[in-house]
Length: 516
Image (cartoon, rainbow, N blue to C red; front, side):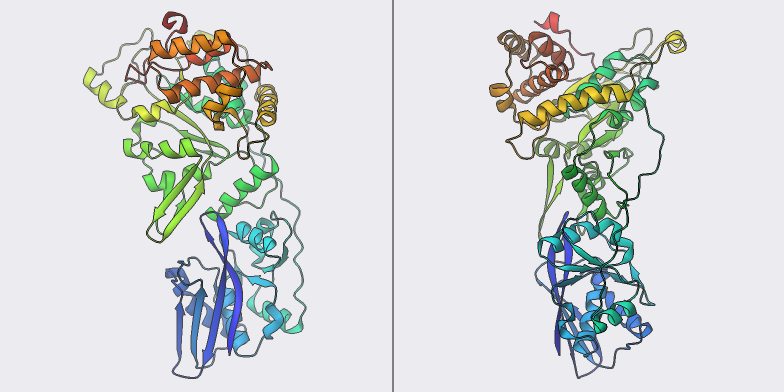
């Protein structure tokens, strides 16, 4: 008898339907899985046969053929164990053929028949909701799948429980647990930072407009400390953004059972591979830029990363997504993040620091700084010099503004941007908007525009840098609740740009008054 059980798989961060077709026929005992199964799927036959025996339904000596349709798409993971087992039982007549009507099934089987957690339960649940299907999945995935809207969930503990419920026609809906509150973790407050007024201002602008930042300074100046306080001043995720973050975490196999998530903050080590940073592998898995989606990607010791790895960020920084093209197809991962890089100006870290002597040879400094390519430097909206804080200032300085105070201003600026781009889907802040649109509709004062043009000529700014300066100026105006971008806003934005005619990204930022 031929049986068909609906299931699902994940490609990228989206789910698609898979029909598990099972035929149990007379013949030499054999168990074959076709339909482009990968290693974990091929191994399911051993788990399924043993789990069936422990559930009280041993597989008789038959010829079993399993087809995973569509057969031209590679299948990965262990989520097909349960639908294969149920398909066999339907073929043997143990489970009624109509018991799985309007039902999709996913789940890994332990050898004793226990259902184990699978990856990607949230996008699968969202797909089931769109298809108006009830979803059967392991109990460990219930809290995660409950974030999807309009989906009925059933979560028996074991294969035997699933079979008994289907035979009796009493497959009960699982009770969605109350969202688990995130664990209380120490909050890095911006008030802990002593001095560094320019860097604090840059972080506020970056948070308000979603702009990328490069922090340059000697070791121990506080670059890492500043970067780790950026998430505390970012606006809270809206419901759609929270669902995107949870979906990425679900596909990556990370915990996403808690309530409203916070902005992601990812800080990979500089020894990370290119595939680990941007995504890849077989099958393609999300990289750090996708795990940082809607949050912050912090690259400490930026110039220690291989240049080829850093250059892989160029297209995602422009597009907000990563398309991995492979022979079997193209997988798209979201990658809208704020990049924060921290670097020393030279191998010893003392170049350009007042009162310090750099002992690096000029050729070593040039080689060190060349690891950051010009096109990537051009995509970093703000370059901030972070100097060492004198010990006397550290001992005497009062606490600065707290993160909560800065976040209030950032959220007010984001609200203005959200209204401005309400008719543009997918655009929530100035950094994501098209430069030409901001130029045409951003209400730039004539004096500010003239200053921007003159500074671009003197500093050798590219067209991309020109519009990025304009978008930073628009963000500064939003922070001040000003409708028109004025000359002072443009001047402050220009101070965060290095002159591109100088190939050394670690040189001090230009003086706009001297340039103009």
